[in-house]
Amino acid sequence: MRRLVIVVVFLGFAVSSFAEKVFDCGVYLRLRQEYLMNALNFDDDTPDDNYFRIKAGVWGRWNFSENVNLYVKLMSEPKIALDTDGVLMSKGRDAWDDEIYVDNLYLDVKNLFGMPVDLRLGRQDFLMTHGEGFVIMDGTPYDGSRSFYFNAARATVKFNKKNSLDIIYVNDPPKDEYLPVINPQDRQIVRSDEEAFIFYGKFKPSDKFSLEPYYIYKFEDATTDRGALTINTVGNRAVLDFAPWRLRGELAYQFGDYKDGSDREAWGGYTYLTRFFKEAKLSPSFEVGYAYLSGDDPDTADDEGWNPVFSKWPWISELYVFGSAIERHEPGYWTNIQVFRAKLDMNLTEKTGLSLAYNYLRANENSVGPFFGTGDQRGHLAHIILTHKFTKNIDGHLHFEYFKPEDYYAVGNRDDAIFLRWQLQMQF
Image 1 (cartoon, one colour):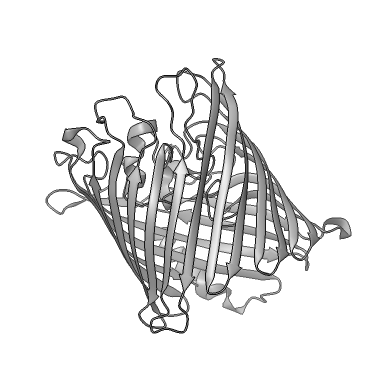
Image 2 (tube, rainbow, N blue to C red):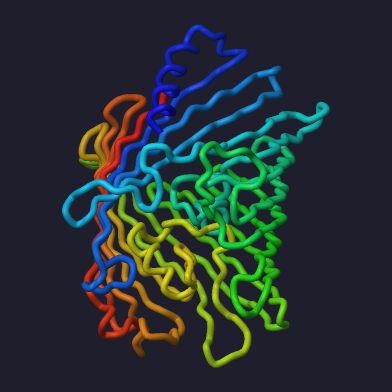
């Protein structure tokens, strides 16, 4: 890991004399400490988790012509924990010689053969490129925020400047098989083999209104006794701006079947209304919203639970993403939930932001097992996030979340939970 940091810093200075039109490159460094109390099962008897994450990398882009370029990014992220005595340990692997992996490697071709079609072939990210991450966000959810990539081929058909259609093929194995890894740690990044075809439209009928209809066909290899799953997701996202208000929402329907013959059918969606006060002091905005993800009815042979598709990331909560693993044995498997949210954002200074939020969480169906009670109240979740931009290339944040479980959980799993993180991020 130390060798990678040295190489990253050296390259950042060494390439400054290269012509940007031919070759461009940069470095990335993210420092984090995260502390979790009772976040895994809401039980005071569970040891706290306290660790550092150091994510470092280097990227380069070769511009072969105005319309063709090759992009590559190498990354590494060791996770170094503090034990109960405050002593550093390595979370089960060598803390200072972690693996270096290819985070991105893709070829971009714009206006293919003179047609209004752009191609991106290879390992790539879809970070907030399709809506706000409700169905497409993270292709490697098992490693948290270490990586997000998809092994994918994407063609963007451009009807005009305001309307386009993405056609995407995805193939993600449980472990990194397609590109070399330096000092491999045999890390699992996806729960099972996943393959998908995605059709995602982006249309803007007017300056104030946009639509994003989509269809996703996805195959997931066996992760339960039901066997492999084939699932279809049909949905649409809409955004309406009528200043000083903004209304946005998304609704999707899922249908498919398991190898054992049982069916999968689910609904999911959200709606949020935001009021902006740009002329007021601190330029605050206030948002209220609701999200619904159907749950599996334990009294039927089929599965009615929402499948998060490619959205197993902390879109509801950084803290509760760990608790979600109790139900489907996979962090970020958002399902069987209702979220009622109120959020206030403001700018304390030109460079400092503050976000305050309260969420009331409910379940649609009861779950079976020793962790669960007989009620439908998941609990109360609050967050405080302070952000600051130190320079053009350096920013940071403090993130605090508090969760109070209710009767959806068993009596022994209702202890309050805390998530705390500080972060410093540098990009050059």
